[in-house]
Structure formats: C-alpha cells, structure tokens
Image (cartoon, rainbow, N blue to C red; front, top):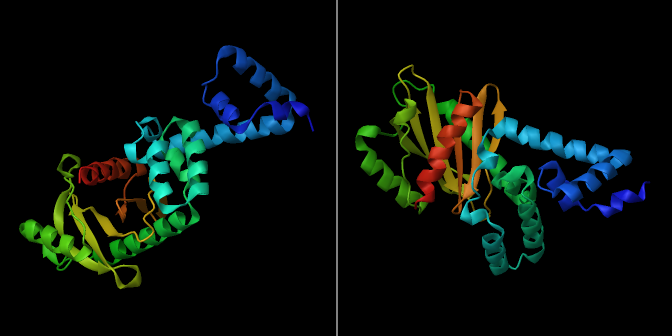
Length: 260
C-alpha cells in the first residue's frame, strides 16, 4: 500500500473534499490522492456522499448549525448522561462538518436513534394511510376547536403542542386526533388539506431515548416522510408530494417547535 495515505488523516481528507484546505496543503493532498488508488477511491466516495446529501436536502446542509447540535452543546448534554465515547465521536465529526452543515449529525447518531426514527416514521405513515382517506371522520377534533385540540393533546402528551401554520403553502388545518405510540404512550396526529384536497399529516410522539437527530427522509409507495427527534419527542411530516415541498413544510414545523 502507498505510504502517502498515512500522511492524510480523515479530517483533512474531508476538508479537501469540502474545499476548506489552504492552497499549499491542498496541493499536497491532491498529489497524495492522485498517487494512491485506495485514497482516491475514498475521496471519490466522500465527494459522492456530499452530492447525495445535497440532492436529498437541497440547501439544508448549508444552513447555520442549530445551537442544540453544536459540539459544545452535545458534549455537555452527553456528559450528563456519562456517554463519553459517543460524545467524542460526535464532537470530531461535527467539527469536520461533512457537507458543510448540521446534517452531518446524522452520520454519528447512535443506533438507538436510528431505530427510533424508523419506528416514528412507520407509525406516522400507517396513521397517514388510515386517516387521510376518511371523508366524514378524518380527525377527532376539527379545526373549529383548535384551541381545545391543542390543549387536550398537550395535556395527554405532557408536551406543549403547537399547530404549525402552513397557509402560505396553501394548506389549512383540518384537525387532529389522539393515537397510540410505543409502549402504550399517547401520540398526536394533525391533518392539513389544500384546495385540491391533498392531505398531509404531522405526527408527534414521545421519544423515550432522549436522542436528537437531523431530518431523515424516506419514501415508500409514493408516500414521503421527513422524521426527526428533538425536545424528547419524535416528529414526522408525511404526504404525497415532492420531497422539496415536504422539506419546506418540515422546516416550518422545526421552527415552530424550536420556539418552545
């Protein structure tokens, strides 16, 4: 194997891919990459990964890192839990800033967080498929009683629920309902509809792992979902619409609950 590979650590290789190296060091790294087929393949894989993140999430990777995902905040939170090893890994990777943004946090999310987001997404999609086709009873409490709906669901979930405003995107609140989550815990579903009759849902459920993640996307059978964990809760936006449009609505949800 070419010894030049060991002159470049992983952090520096990511910085090279992101165009963040000083010119003199960039030239040296470029030469080493060109001379080492294995290193060249690794660099190409990282570059492709960056492009895939940008393709999936548009401008999100370039946005400011939220305070809750900054290495200092994560380290302090994890220290209280005595999870010292995951803290070190998170701090290093977030410092590197793969793709230049806070979506890099997904790369170091503990396996339990990955499992939790998958469960939240599955329940959200299942509830979406069951209730969005309903004509007479799509929700338990309609938007005319929004204040009561929010107060009721907040009390049941033990969390200050808010209904995001999607009217600029053409969607109005239909209402909401109480749903079961894992372990018999309560969850909430809010349904929105546009003039064309398209419906989307916001699913909120307790996140007992207390982990936090960035947005994760999945599409199954034409149903798209963005799911994430924060504030001890799991959130999922689900609808049959382009990924980019659903992402913008998910950002509205994120900003709405970030203010709590």
